[in-house]
Figure (cartoon, rainbow, N blue to C red):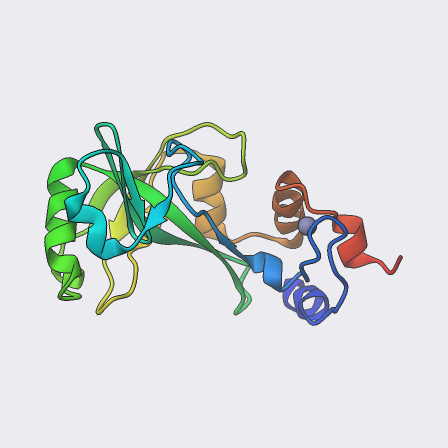
Length: 187
Ligand SMILES: [Zn+2]
């Protein structure tokens, strides 16, 4: 059921009235920095990270005060369909794990690390409470780690486990401020 409905809206050319994105485009979402990171901190190249002593943000790393963050991928399956929502998120990790990850990153060897405990550093959707406990599963090559939510009983963790149904998905997009009506119906 979900599959058929989803296939239908994912192929739609209708655009969200608020942002001009199609439904399919809304299934990938990038957080450009951890929520704790000041919005005016410029994003630098990964290679400059080690040279910076103060707060710093790059494509894959961030340090704000005593906190260290790694860029990761959070996948929310859509029911039992082949589709999924893919979120580029940030994960707070301990300084020890952070240093190990940083050491292995250049040679694309982070895949040899055991799962790393951490905390989701972006509120999904915005306004919900943080942090949420999670675990990062390292991936081969230069792929970003995949985040598994582990916060007991949390709604987002349940959604990751069971997959979103259409109501969940529309609710989530609505919580981000998207205009669901304009995506589902012709004006
Ligand atoms: Zn929108």
